[in-house]
Structures are given as structure tokens and as C-alpha cells.
Length: 440
Image 1 (tube, rainbow, N blue to C red):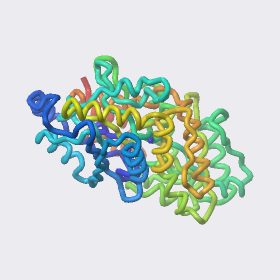
Image 2: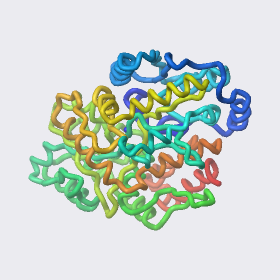
Image 3: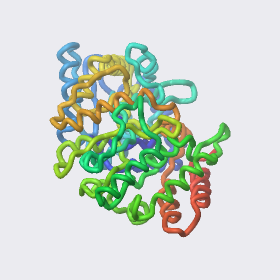
Image 4: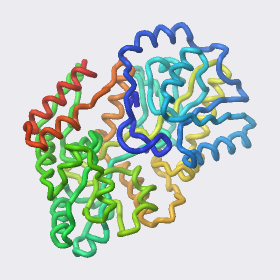
């Protein structure tokens, strides 16, 4: 469930990491601007009238509409919900900061240093034990101030062609408490491919996020910074990436995904692929689009670490425009994250909750989709804290005025898969790219 580059949610457009706003050039100007704007200005709403910006495709704003209407009915506070097109949303926020006309509350795709100093501290909400908000996925600054809380989270995960598994007579796990290793999964997928004459055992999103998840599960940290901010890779990461490159043999996995951008989801939906490594954002679409075969989400492999790459689906923030509006905004967000209200939001919008202990009832007619969301909700509390490392790291980069504008992972591993360089050389080039853009 950003500039910090969070994964695009369904309301912000699925399919790959969000583009990162180039921040280094604006960080200093942003700091000067905000010191001039300051808090407590005359902009913004009042104690009885707030403005709430979101960015979502039509139909995916159902949860926000429902909760805003309920809050207005219960409290008498008017909340004006404004749905802004994703293209240009970051620019509109930046321009609004410059004009001292930010909304009071927003669900944003990114934190931006040009307005991050205007954010309300949401620590009271995030640290409220009743809410059970997963602390691994909130955005904090160095002082511990909570800058944003996810509207939802997203996580990498495995889909299988259930029909092919059943045809081959091969078992698979259904509970995250008794999951398989990557070795066991690949053995099963290869057996299914051979017995059913499927084309590939696995397709795998051309995504640094999906690769990180696999590396974490194999005990590595992927490209990880030390206390000085210098990036490196450990031995477990090197071993995991070498294994991944080896899988791309046009039998176990198609080379075309990571070398030329072929669509792994389309391949899986064709019915001729045993499994697909992607994530929760596919569930809603698959509940309607896959009709040729039965599919299922299955527990992520653990070898030996139970993990994923978990990101904010969206980032909920409050802006300190003036004292009355800031207090009202915080009250609204406090109300929103009360478990009963937050569960209703997740149900109506199809969100994977950042709060544990909930049991959302989703509107999907597909049994596979219902089971998939149940599995993700059961799995996330079991994931190792490293699952949220990259999400938190991006927050820290933004607060330093930096961004990973060009993650070299896809290009460098594509070269390794094509045999143009070794996997170790690819990793060294990736490390160099990280150190150049966000190191130190």
C-alpha cells in the first residue's frame, strides 16, 4: 500500500516506480522560500473548513469521498475534496507552496523539500498504540517528527497460474506461516512448466523494487548505505543477483523483459507462464481481466528471510498554513486513522492497510482477489524490517535535497543478462550510480 518515490497506487496510476522530482536544484531555494513563508500565515482553511487534495483515477476516490462525507456529518467541519490529475500534481504543490496557498491536508505521491518544512507533525497519530500503524513505513525526519503516514501500503508478491499447478499435480503453500524458499519455488515452477509445456517458469517485473524484495529474502541488503551515506553491496546480495541473472535463460525466465522491456504481466495473463513476481497492485485488475485460467497469490519465498519491498501507496500529510486550520487538519487525520474509520477507507478504495489487526471486507467478487488481499494482510506483519528500508531511505534523501533520478538497476542488469558484463560488474555500476546521486 516518493520524491520520495513511492510505487504508483491505483489512484495515482499503476505500473512502475514514480518518477522522482529533481530536487537538488530546488532544495536551497525551497528552504529559503519556506523560511519566508513560515507557519501561521493567513493562508489555508479555518477550524470549520478544510481543503483536502488527492490525485486518483475516477472510481478510485470512493474511500476518500465516503470518509469526508462521514466526517462532515459527525463534526460539522467542511472538507473540500479536490481531485487533481497526477500529471502536474507535484508541480501544482510546488507552485502552491511558492504562492503560500497549500491545501490543509493532502494525499501526495512525494515529499518535496520545497514544502516539507510546512508539514504538521503527525507523531501523535503514528505513535498511538490503538492505531497500530506500522512504524517501518511512516516518513520521519532526523528529529523523529512524522512527516507523513501512508494512506496504504504496497508490497511485492507472487502470483501463480493455479490451473497449471493443479494440472501438473504440484503443491504450493497458502499460508505465510509455512512458506517456501526460492529454491523450492523454482523447483516447483520448473516442474509445472515441464509437465504442462508452459513457455516460462516465471516472469519478473523489470523493477528495482521487485529485485530488492528477492534479494532481501535471500538474506542480502541490496544497495545499502552505511552511516556515512556510502553505498555498497554485501556477499548475499552478489549471490542473489548472480542467481537472478542466471534465471534469465529464455526458459526459466524470458530475457526480453529485463533487456528490452517486454510486458511480464501480459505474458502471465496469456496463460502460458507458471508464475509472475509482481505485487498487490495487480490484484484488482486480475480479479476481472484473467478469465482463461484460475490464478492465485501465494506467500513470498523466504530464503531465509521473510520479507518483501514495502512502499507507501500514497503519503497523507497536513500543512501548517495557520494555527486554526493546522489544528483542524490534525483532528481530521487523527479521526481518519482511528481503526474503524481507516478500515472503512481501505475497504471502499481497495487499500492494503498500514495498520495491523484490521480485517477489511473488500468489494471484489473474485474469490482469488479476496484471498490475495487476505494473504497480503497476513504477511506484512511477518516481514523483516528491511522490507521498509528503501521507503525510509528515500525520505532521508529528500530531506537532504537529493533524489535517485535515474536508478541504474534495470540498465545494468539488462547488460548482465545479455552477457555484456558480469553480475558483479553490474552491481558495482549500480553502486557507483547510487553514490553519485544520493551518497554521502
